[in-house]
Image (cartoon, rainbow, N blue to C red; front, side, top):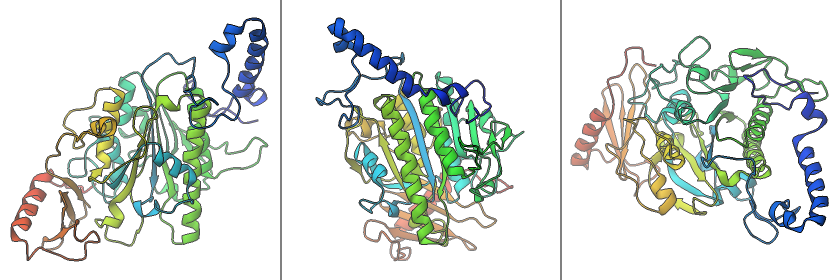
Amino acid sequence: MIRTIPSRGVPVLRSTFRDFLPPRAVVAVLAALLGWVATAVPFLAAAEGPQAAGAPGVGLSASGQAARGNMHRRSSQPNVILLAADGWSEADVDHPGTRPHLEKLAASGARWTRAYAGAASTPASRAALLTGRHSGHGRLRGPSPTPLANEDITLGEVFRAAGYRTAAVGVWDLGGNDTSGHPLKQGFADWFGFLDSKEARDLHPKSLWRNTDIFDNLIDAQGRLANYAPDWFARFATNYVQVHEDHPFFLYVAHPLPGSVGSRETREQHLRLWDRLVGSVVRELERGRILRDTILVVTSTGGGGRGEDPLSEGRLRVPLWVSWPGKIPAGRVHDRPVALWDVLPTVAALARVRAPAELDGISLAPELLGGRDPLPRAGGLYWETAEAMPRRAILWEHWKAVERPPAGAVELFDLQADPATLKDLAESQPERLSEARRRLREAADPLPSTHP
Protein backbone atom coordinates (compact mmCIF):
# COMPACT_ATOMS: atom_id res chain seq x y z
CA MET A 1 0.00 0.00 0.00
CA ILE A 2 1.14 3.54 -0.70
CA ARG A 3 1.79 5.67 2.34
CA THR A 4 0.41 9.16 2.51
CA ILE A 5 3.16 11.76 2.11
CA PRO A 6 3.40 13.77 5.33
CA SER A 7 1.64 17.09 4.81
CA ARG A 8 -0.40 19.65 6.63
CA GLY A 9 -3.50 17.50 6.55
CA VAL A 10 -3.55 17.49 2.74
CA PRO A 11 -2.59 14.07 1.33
CA VAL A 12 -1.22 13.86 -2.19
CA LEU A 13 -1.23 10.08 -2.33
CA ARG A 14 -4.17 7.90 -1.50
CA SER A 15 -4.41 7.00 2.14
CA THR A 16 -4.56 3.44 3.48
CA PHE A 17 -8.37 3.50 3.42
CA ARG A 18 -8.43 4.74 -0.16
CA ASP A 19 -6.12 1.96 -1.26
CA PHE A 20 -8.77 -0.53 -0.18
CA LEU A 21 -11.75 1.50 -1.35
CA PRO A 22 -10.88 4.25 -3.87
CA PRO A 23 -13.18 7.28 -3.99
CA ARG A 24 -14.44 6.30 -7.46
CA ALA A 25 -15.57 2.97 -6.02
CA VAL A 26 -17.54 4.83 -3.34
CA VAL A 27 -19.16 6.93 -6.06
CA ALA A 28 -20.07 3.78 -8.00
CA VAL A 29 -21.73 2.21 -4.94
CA LEU A 30 -23.70 5.38 -4.23
CA ALA A 31 -24.70 5.62 -7.90
CA ALA A 32 -26.02 2.05 -7.81
CA LEU A 33 -28.00 2.79 -4.64
CA LEU A 34 -29.36 5.96 -6.20
CA GLY A 35 -30.45 4.02 -9.25
CA TRP A 36 -32.42 1.59 -7.04
CA VAL A 37 -34.11 4.47 -5.23
CA ALA A 38 -34.87 6.14 -8.56
CA THR A 39 -37.10 3.23 -9.62
CA ALA A 40 -39.46 4.18 -6.80
CA VAL A 41 -39.00 7.93 -6.99
CA PRO A 42 -38.64 8.88 -10.68
CA PHE A 43 -37.98 12.56 -10.12
CA LEU A 44 -34.79 11.71 -8.23
CA ALA A 45 -33.38 10.07 -11.36
CA ALA A 46 -34.05 13.22 -13.37
CA ALA A 47 -32.46 15.44 -10.75
CA GLU A 48 -29.47 13.37 -9.65
CA GLY A 49 -28.90 10.65 -12.27
CA PRO A 50 -25.21 9.95 -12.99
CA GLN A 51 -23.67 10.78 -16.35
CA ALA A 52 -24.09 7.99 -18.88
CA ALA A 53 -21.08 5.75 -19.33
CA GLY A 54 -18.99 6.61 -22.34
CA ALA A 55 -20.56 10.04 -22.73
CA PRO A 56 -18.94 11.89 -25.60
CA GLY A 57 -16.96 15.12 -25.34
CA VAL A 58 -15.69 17.12 -22.42
CA GLY A 59 -18.34 17.64 -19.77
CA LEU A 60 -21.19 16.54 -22.07
CA SER A 61 -23.84 13.91 -21.51
CA ALA A 62 -24.89 11.43 -24.17
CA SER A 63 -27.59 13.85 -25.32
CA GLY A 64 -25.01 16.57 -25.83
CA GLN A 65 -26.25 18.71 -22.93
CA ALA A 66 -23.79 20.11 -20.43
CA ALA A 67 -23.25 17.63 -17.62
CA ARG A 68 -23.84 18.65 -14.02
CA GLY A 69 -20.76 19.95 -12.28
CA ASN A 70 -19.37 18.67 -9.01
CA MET A 71 -22.38 18.69 -6.67
CA HIS A 72 -20.13 19.18 -3.64
CA ARG A 73 -18.53 22.38 -4.95
CA ARG A 74 -19.84 25.42 -3.11
CA SER A 75 -17.75 28.20 -4.67
CA SER A 76 -18.07 30.12 -7.90
CA GLN A 77 -14.32 30.83 -7.96
CA PRO A 78 -12.53 28.87 -10.70
CA ASN A 79 -9.56 26.62 -10.03
CA VAL A 80 -6.31 27.65 -11.71
CA ILE A 81 -3.71 25.12 -12.89
CA LEU A 82 -0.42 26.36 -14.33
CA LEU A 83 1.55 23.65 -16.16
CA ALA A 84 5.04 24.82 -17.15
CA ALA A 85 7.49 22.53 -18.92
CA ASP A 86 11.23 23.21 -19.25
CA GLY A 87 12.75 23.31 -22.73
CA TRP A 88 9.45 22.91 -24.59
CA SER A 89 9.59 25.34 -27.50
CA GLU A 90 7.14 26.72 -30.02
CA ALA A 91 9.00 24.66 -32.64
CA ASP A 92 7.85 21.47 -30.86
CA VAL A 93 4.17 22.26 -31.38
CA ASP A 94 3.49 21.74 -35.07
CA HIS A 95 3.76 17.96 -35.27
CA PRO A 96 0.15 16.75 -35.75
CA GLY A 97 -0.72 13.45 -34.15
CA THR A 98 2.38 13.18 -31.96
CA ARG A 99 1.03 14.94 -28.84
CA PRO A 100 -2.67 14.05 -28.71
CA HIS A 101 -3.43 15.45 -25.25
CA LEU A 102 -1.66 18.74 -25.89
CA GLU A 103 -3.31 19.07 -29.30
CA LYS A 104 -6.76 18.50 -27.79
CA LEU A 105 -6.08 21.06 -25.08
CA ALA A 106 -4.78 23.64 -27.56
CA ALA A 107 -7.94 23.25 -29.61
CA SER A 108 -10.13 23.76 -26.54
CA GLY A 109 -8.99 27.32 -25.86
CA ALA A 110 -6.68 30.10 -27.02
CA ARG A 111 -3.11 29.87 -28.26
CA TRP A 112 -0.40 32.49 -28.77
CA THR A 113 2.06 31.81 -31.57
CA ARG A 114 4.42 34.58 -30.45
CA ALA A 115 4.81 33.95 -26.74
CA TYR A 116 8.18 34.50 -25.07
CA ALA A 117 9.94 33.06 -22.02
CA GLY A 118 10.32 35.19 -18.94
CA ALA A 119 14.11 35.38 -19.22
CA ALA A 120 17.13 33.95 -20.99
CA SER A 121 17.79 31.52 -18.09
CA THR A 122 15.34 29.05 -16.61
CA PRO A 123 15.44 30.25 -12.94
CA ALA A 124 14.88 33.87 -13.96
CA SER A 125 12.13 32.77 -16.35
CA ARG A 126 10.37 30.93 -13.53
CA ALA A 127 10.62 34.07 -11.40
CA ALA A 128 9.08 36.20 -14.15
CA LEU A 129 6.25 33.68 -14.58
CA LEU A 130 5.39 33.64 -10.87
CA THR A 131 5.86 37.35 -10.09
CA GLY A 132 4.70 39.11 -13.26
CA ARG A 133 7.95 41.09 -13.51
CA HIS A 134 10.53 40.79 -16.27
CA SER A 135 14.25 40.23 -15.73
CA GLY A 136 15.01 43.96 -15.86
CA HIS A 137 12.94 44.56 -12.71
CA GLY A 138 12.93 41.18 -11.01
CA ARG A 139 15.30 39.87 -8.38
CA LEU A 140 16.49 36.99 -10.58
CA ARG A 141 18.02 38.04 -13.88
CA GLY A 142 20.43 35.27 -14.74
CA PRO A 143 21.23 31.60 -14.11
CA SER A 144 22.87 32.09 -10.68
CA PRO A 145 20.53 30.87 -7.94
CA THR A 146 19.21 33.54 -5.60
CA PRO A 147 16.06 33.32 -3.48
CA LEU A 148 12.98 35.42 -3.84
CA ALA A 149 12.60 37.99 -1.06
CA ASN A 150 9.73 38.54 1.35
CA GLU A 151 8.60 41.57 -0.63
CA ASP A 152 8.28 39.55 -3.84
CA ILE A 153 4.65 38.59 -4.47
CA THR A 154 4.03 35.33 -6.30
CA LEU A 155 1.00 33.73 -7.87
CA GLY A 156 0.85 31.48 -4.80
CA GLU A 157 0.45 34.49 -2.51
CA VAL A 158 -2.09 36.12 -4.81
CA PHE A 159 -4.39 33.10 -4.78
CA ARG A 160 -3.84 32.13 -1.16
CA ALA A 161 -4.87 35.65 -0.13
CA ALA A 162 -8.08 35.11 -2.11
CA GLY A 163 -8.94 31.96 -0.13
CA TYR A 164 -7.52 29.38 -2.52
CA ARG A 165 -5.66 26.25 -1.51
CA THR A 166 -2.24 26.34 -3.13
CA ALA A 167 0.40 23.79 -4.10
CA ALA A 168 3.60 23.64 -6.16
CA VAL A 169 5.24 20.53 -7.59
CA GLY A 170 8.28 19.90 -9.77
CA VAL A 171 11.34 22.15 -9.93
CA TRP A 172 11.24 25.27 -7.76
CA ASP A 173 14.55 27.09 -8.47
CA LEU A 174 13.65 30.19 -6.43
CA GLY A 175 15.02 29.50 -2.95
CA GLY A 176 15.91 26.58 -0.69
CA ASN A 177 15.15 25.63 2.89
CA ASP A 178 15.79 28.40 5.43
CA THR A 179 15.52 31.11 2.76
CA SER A 180 12.83 33.68 2.08
CA GLY A 181 12.32 32.12 -1.34
CA HIS A 182 11.15 28.69 -0.18
CA PRO A 183 7.73 27.80 -1.67
CA LEU A 184 6.11 27.61 1.78
CA LYS A 185 7.16 31.24 2.32
CA GLN A 186 5.96 32.33 -1.11
CA GLY A 187 2.27 31.49 -0.81
CA PHE A 188 2.22 27.72 -1.29
CA ALA A 189 0.74 25.53 1.43
CA ASP A 190 2.01 22.34 -0.19
CA TRP A 191 5.28 21.66 -1.98
CA PHE A 192 6.84 18.52 -3.50
CA GLY A 193 9.86 18.19 -5.77
CA PHE A 194 13.38 19.52 -6.44
CA LEU A 195 14.43 22.79 -4.86
CA ASP A 196 16.79 23.70 -7.71
CA SER A 197 17.79 22.74 -11.23
CA LYS A 198 21.00 21.03 -10.09
CA GLU A 199 18.97 18.51 -8.09
CA ALA A 200 16.68 18.02 -11.07
CA ARG A 201 19.51 16.76 -13.29
CA ASP A 202 18.97 13.34 -11.73
CA LEU A 203 15.45 12.26 -12.70
CA HIS A 204 15.87 9.10 -10.58
CA PRO A 205 16.63 10.72 -7.21
CA LYS A 206 17.05 8.92 -3.93
CA SER A 207 14.67 11.42 -2.35
CA LEU A 208 12.55 14.50 -3.05
CA TRP A 209 11.58 17.47 -0.92
CA ARG A 210 8.16 17.38 0.72
CA ASN A 211 7.56 20.82 2.22
CA THR A 212 10.73 21.25 4.35
CA ASP A 213 11.36 17.53 4.87
CA ILE A 214 13.08 14.85 2.82
CA PHE A 215 10.73 12.24 1.41
CA ASP A 216 12.50 9.00 0.49
CA ASN A 217 9.56 6.59 0.42
CA LEU A 218 9.78 6.37 -3.38
CA ILE A 219 8.06 3.02 -3.75
CA ASP A 220 5.03 1.83 -5.69
CA ALA A 221 1.91 0.05 -4.47
CA GLN A 222 3.78 -3.28 -4.51
CA GLY A 223 6.63 -1.95 -2.40
CA ARG A 224 9.10 -1.74 -5.29
CA LEU A 225 11.48 1.16 -5.86
CA ALA A 226 9.82 3.63 -8.22
CA ASN A 227 11.89 6.79 -8.12
CA TYR A 228 11.36 8.35 -11.54
CA ALA A 229 10.59 11.92 -10.58
CA PRO A 230 8.23 12.83 -13.48
CA ASP A 231 5.95 9.93 -12.50
CA TRP A 232 5.79 11.22 -8.94
CA PHE A 233 5.01 14.75 -10.12
CA ALA A 234 2.14 13.45 -12.27
CA ARG A 235 0.86 11.44 -9.33
CA PHE A 236 1.01 14.45 -7.01
CA ALA A 237 -0.81 16.66 -9.51
CA THR A 238 -3.69 14.27 -10.20
CA ASN A 239 -4.14 13.35 -6.55
CA TYR A 240 -4.11 17.01 -5.56
CA VAL A 241 -6.91 17.69 -8.05
CA GLN A 242 -8.89 14.74 -6.72
CA VAL A 243 -8.52 15.65 -3.06
CA HIS A 244 -9.39 19.33 -3.62
CA GLU A 245 -12.10 19.05 -6.25
CA ASP A 246 -14.72 20.58 -3.91
CA HIS A 247 -12.72 23.76 -3.08
CA PRO A 248 -10.98 26.35 -5.31
CA PHE A 249 -7.27 25.67 -5.68
CA PHE A 250 -4.19 26.97 -7.47
CA LEU A 251 -1.78 24.25 -8.61
CA TYR A 252 1.60 25.10 -10.13
CA VAL A 253 3.38 22.23 -11.92
CA ALA A 254 6.97 23.12 -12.91
CA HIS A 255 7.95 20.10 -14.95
CA PRO A 256 11.63 19.23 -15.61
CA LEU A 257 10.87 17.79 -19.07
CA PRO A 258 11.67 17.81 -21.92
CA GLY A 259 14.74 19.59 -20.52
CA SER A 260 18.07 19.92 -22.27
CA VAL A 261 19.12 16.60 -23.77
CA GLY A 262 21.44 15.77 -26.64
CA SER A 263 19.56 12.82 -28.10
CA ARG A 264 16.59 13.50 -30.35
CA GLU A 265 15.06 10.16 -29.34
CA THR A 266 15.31 11.00 -25.63
CA ARG A 267 13.83 14.43 -26.21
CA GLU A 268 10.91 12.92 -28.11
CA GLN A 269 10.34 10.46 -25.28
CA HIS A 270 10.35 13.33 -22.79
CA LEU A 271 7.86 15.27 -24.88
CA ARG A 272 5.52 12.26 -24.89
CA LEU A 273 5.77 12.10 -21.08
CA TRP A 274 4.95 15.80 -20.89
CA ASP A 275 1.95 15.19 -23.15
CA ARG A 276 0.74 12.35 -20.92
CA LEU A 277 1.09 14.48 -17.78
CA VAL A 278 -1.12 17.18 -19.28
CA GLY A 279 -3.59 14.51 -20.38
CA SER A 280 -3.74 12.94 -16.91
CA VAL A 281 -4.49 16.29 -15.27
CA VAL A 282 -7.28 17.05 -17.75
CA ARG A 283 -8.68 13.54 -17.29
CA GLU A 284 -8.82 13.99 -13.51
CA LEU A 285 -10.62 17.31 -13.94
CA GLU A 286 -13.16 15.54 -16.16
CA ARG A 287 -13.63 12.74 -13.64
CA GLY A 288 -14.27 15.23 -10.86
CA ARG A 289 -16.61 17.23 -13.12
CA ILE A 290 -14.63 20.40 -12.51
CA LEU A 291 -13.06 20.92 -15.94
CA ARG A 292 -15.51 23.75 -16.63
CA ASP A 293 -14.59 25.25 -13.27
CA THR A 294 -10.86 25.31 -14.08
CA ILE A 295 -8.58 27.74 -15.88
CA LEU A 296 -5.70 25.79 -17.45
CA VAL A 297 -2.50 27.55 -18.52
CA VAL A 298 0.10 25.46 -20.36
CA THR A 299 3.49 26.91 -21.24
CA SER A 300 7.26 26.50 -20.94
CA THR A 301 9.94 28.40 -19.03
CA GLY A 302 12.28 28.31 -22.03
CA GLY A 303 12.67 26.93 -25.52
CA GLY A 304 15.10 24.37 -26.83
CA GLY A 305 18.44 24.86 -28.53
CA ARG A 306 20.72 25.17 -25.53
CA GLY A 307 23.70 25.89 -27.81
CA GLU A 308 22.03 28.92 -29.34
CA ASP A 309 22.36 32.56 -28.35
CA PRO A 310 20.23 32.83 -25.17
CA LEU A 311 18.45 35.88 -26.60
CA SER A 312 17.65 34.25 -29.95
CA GLU A 313 14.09 33.64 -31.06
CA GLY A 314 14.66 29.87 -30.82
CA ARG A 315 15.63 30.10 -27.16
CA LEU A 316 13.00 32.63 -26.11
CA ARG A 317 9.91 31.51 -28.01
CA VAL A 318 7.62 29.19 -26.03
CA PRO A 319 4.06 27.85 -26.35
CA LEU A 320 1.36 29.60 -24.33
CA TRP A 321 -2.15 28.14 -24.24
CA VAL A 322 -5.09 29.06 -22.01
CA SER A 323 -8.23 26.94 -21.72
CA TRP A 324 -11.43 27.48 -19.72
CA PRO A 325 -14.30 25.50 -21.28
CA GLY A 326 -17.50 27.48 -21.49
CA LYS A 327 -15.74 30.79 -20.84
CA ILE A 328 -12.85 31.11 -23.32
CA PRO A 329 -13.90 30.45 -26.95
CA ALA A 330 -12.18 27.42 -28.43
CA GLY A 331 -9.83 27.53 -31.37
CA ARG A 332 -8.63 31.12 -31.08
CA VAL A 333 -5.07 31.81 -32.29
CA HIS A 334 -3.31 35.08 -31.47
CA ASP A 335 -0.08 36.29 -33.06
CA ARG A 336 0.60 39.39 -30.96
CA PRO A 337 3.81 39.18 -28.86
CA VAL A 338 3.19 38.25 -25.21
CA ALA A 339 5.48 37.00 -22.44
CA LEU A 340 5.34 34.82 -19.34
CA TRP A 341 5.10 37.84 -17.06
CA ASP A 342 1.63 38.41 -18.56
CA VAL A 343 0.34 35.18 -16.96
CA LEU A 344 -0.08 36.55 -13.41
CA PRO A 345 -2.25 39.55 -14.29
CA THR A 346 -4.19 37.45 -16.81
CA VAL A 347 -5.22 34.60 -14.51
CA ALA A 348 -5.87 37.03 -11.65
CA ALA A 349 -8.27 38.96 -13.88
CA LEU A 350 -9.96 35.79 -15.12
CA ALA A 351 -10.44 34.52 -11.55
CA ARG A 352 -11.38 38.02 -10.32
CA VAL A 353 -8.76 38.16 -7.62
CA ARG A 354 -6.56 41.15 -6.86
CA ALA A 355 -3.18 41.31 -8.59
CA PRO A 356 -0.18 43.24 -7.22
CA ALA A 357 0.50 46.75 -8.44
CA GLU A 358 3.46 47.77 -10.63
CA LEU A 359 3.66 44.61 -12.70
CA ASP A 360 5.41 44.44 -16.05
CA GLY A 361 2.77 42.06 -17.33
CA ILE A 362 -0.58 43.07 -18.78
CA SER A 363 -3.85 41.17 -18.53
CA LEU A 364 -4.78 39.22 -21.64
CA ALA A 365 -8.27 38.54 -20.24
CA PRO A 366 -10.07 41.00 -22.58
CA GLU A 367 -8.52 39.24 -25.56
CA LEU A 368 -9.40 35.81 -24.16
CA LEU A 369 -13.00 36.51 -23.16
CA GLY A 370 -14.22 39.01 -25.70
CA GLY A 371 -11.71 39.29 -28.48
CA ARG A 372 -10.87 42.86 -27.46
CA ASP A 373 -7.36 44.26 -27.42
CA PRO A 374 -5.78 44.43 -23.95
CA LEU A 375 -4.42 47.62 -22.49
CA PRO A 376 -1.34 48.87 -24.35
CA ARG A 377 2.04 47.71 -23.13
CA ALA A 378 4.56 50.38 -22.18
CA GLY A 379 8.15 49.95 -23.31
CA GLY A 380 8.05 46.57 -25.02
CA LEU A 381 9.28 43.10 -24.02
CA TYR A 382 12.68 43.05 -22.32
CA TRP A 383 15.25 40.39 -21.43
CA GLU A 384 18.81 40.39 -20.07
CA THR A 385 21.36 37.70 -19.21
CA ALA A 386 22.88 39.31 -16.07
CA GLU A 387 26.39 38.15 -16.82
CA ALA A 388 29.53 40.15 -15.99
CA MET A 389 29.07 41.71 -19.44
CA PRO A 390 25.31 41.25 -19.88
CA ARG A 391 23.49 40.92 -23.14
CA ARG A 392 20.13 42.61 -23.40
CA ALA A 393 17.22 42.51 -25.84
CA ILE A 394 14.00 44.42 -26.36
CA LEU A 395 11.07 43.79 -28.66
CA TRP A 396 8.40 46.32 -29.62
CA GLU A 397 5.92 46.17 -32.48
CA HIS A 398 7.80 44.06 -35.06
CA TRP A 399 11.29 45.30 -34.12
CA LYS A 400 13.83 43.45 -32.00
CA ALA A 401 17.11 44.93 -30.77
CA VAL A 402 19.93 42.96 -29.15
CA GLU A 403 22.80 44.65 -27.28
CA ARG A 404 25.98 42.57 -27.04
CA PRO A 405 29.23 42.97 -25.07
CA PRO A 406 31.87 44.13 -24.82
CA ALA A 407 31.34 47.42 -26.64
CA GLY A 408 27.56 47.46 -26.33
CA ALA A 409 26.92 47.21 -30.06
CA VAL A 410 23.20 46.98 -30.86
CA GLU A 411 21.83 44.77 -33.61
CA LEU A 412 18.42 45.60 -35.06
CA PHE A 413 16.02 43.17 -36.74
CA ASP A 414 12.66 43.47 -38.44
CA LEU A 415 10.83 40.32 -37.31
CA GLN A 416 8.02 40.87 -39.76
CA ALA A 417 10.33 40.64 -42.76
CA ASP A 418 13.08 38.56 -41.13
CA PRO A 419 11.65 36.23 -38.44
CA ALA A 420 14.94 34.28 -38.26
CA THR A 421 16.86 37.49 -37.42
CA LEU A 422 19.44 37.00 -40.16
CA LYS A 423 19.78 40.60 -41.38
CA ASP A 424 21.07 43.32 -39.06
CA LEU A 425 19.47 46.66 -40.00
CA ALA A 426 21.31 48.83 -37.48
CA GLU A 427 23.25 50.79 -40.10
CA SER A 428 20.36 51.25 -42.51
CA GLN A 429 17.80 52.26 -39.83
CA PRO A 430 19.52 54.94 -37.70
CA GLU A 431 16.26 56.35 -36.30
CA ARG A 432 15.03 52.91 -35.25
CA LEU A 433 18.45 52.18 -33.77
CA SER A 434 18.28 55.36 -31.70
CA GLU A 435 14.81 54.36 -30.50
CA ALA A 436 16.10 50.88 -29.60
CA ARG A 437 18.92 52.32 -27.47
CA ARG A 438 16.46 54.58 -25.66
CA ARG A 439 14.08 51.69 -24.96
CA LEU A 440 16.94 49.54 -23.66
CA ARG A 441 18.01 52.33 -21.27
CA GLU A 442 14.51 52.83 -19.93
CA ALA A 443 13.42 49.20 -19.68
CA ALA A 444 15.38 48.05 -16.61
CA ASP A 445 16.66 48.96 -13.21
CA PRO A 446 20.45 49.05 -12.79
CA LEU A 447 22.04 45.61 -12.74
CA PRO A 448 22.63 44.44 -9.12
CA SER A 449 26.30 44.11 -8.19
CA THR A 450 25.77 40.42 -7.33
CA HIS A 451 24.47 39.61 -10.86
CA PRO A 452 21.85 37.07 -9.66
